[in-house]
Image 1: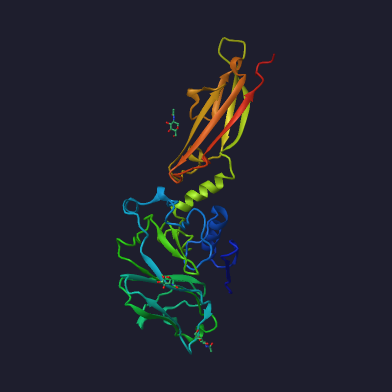
Image 2: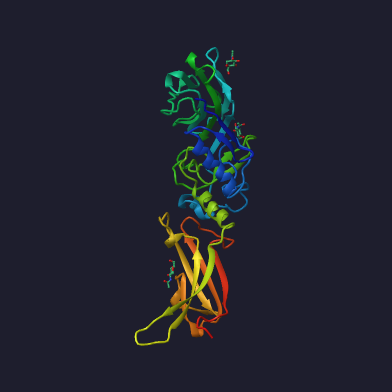
Length: 360
Ligand SMILES: *[C@@H]1O[C@H](CO)[C@@H](O)[C@H](O)[C@H]1NC(C)=O
Ligand SMILES: *[C@@H]1O[C@H](CO)[C@@H](O)[C@H](O)[C@H]1NC(C)=O
Ligand SMILES: *[C@@H]1O[C@H](CO)[C@@H](O)[C@H](O)[C@H]1NC(C)=O
């Protein structure tokens, strides 16, 4: 079986793959580009824009409403630097290792070696060394020849000066398939200077292929940074809501009808005008509740609030007084959207009732 992974990070979303390990991950990531309309969060890219990107520290933080209390009380950029980042996309051989030398300032207490490989499925296939120390790379189980991403965090400082990262192919039978796709080394401040904890929202530096700095909301929470992350970060999820609601109205339609109520002992039919608002089935109208969501619904007739119909999708009014102008306003609340500048979570329609139900 041949597995091909073609990802175009620049044109956003051209993906052809038969890879079960990578296909869904890459698809989610590319959909992030096309639906949320955000750029990358990983280092070494060229496009950083949208709700998850911040460029000028003199400007307000775009995701200020998501910042963790700790990040709010002491605003700072999480301390980190990227001394090396490459996409070698190189086939490995057994005659010579692939290596790269990079400098460290020696001022960061922790670092992370991050790389991706394909064609390597056993730990005895490859040795990864930093300054001659075996990093004891272990492949993802069942990865076969497919590409996968590896993170090896090291809780110690690199000394000042040059360092060497080396990839040695050990297994001759992997020649022709073993590939080193990407290589990166990041250095971090201590736990106060750089919060690596998932769920922490702050100002994290991202380094482009030209080593230009922009900022992202979380360390590694977002699948726009790391395709192996299971979720978008909250900033991107909020962006997804707003992006979808820019194209979709919460009110699908409004429907007028007549109903006849029959009371015992009264021979005349009693007509009732009904007006139904059809909403996109979110909040209390979802089949499966996904998050804290609610719709608030308000009705007016000729400018007068119809309190008794608050939060109801169906309005019933005696036919004799039914003629007039009706308005309905809906407002969706979800814990996933904290700021809605363009009122995309609100919708409203005005509707004229021009006929009575009872035949004249
Ligand atoms: C990026 O810039 C920082 C700060 O100047 C430097 O320490 C680091 O080595 C640079 N990394 C690369 C890959 O050029
Ligand atoms: C083997 O790999 C090394 C490191 O990538 C490279 O410099 C060298 O040209 C390769 N040799 C052969 C015979 O392909
Ligand atoms: C209507 O629903 C909203 C959202 O759940 C709620 O906050 C509000 O109190 C409700 N109003 C009434 C009158 O029930």
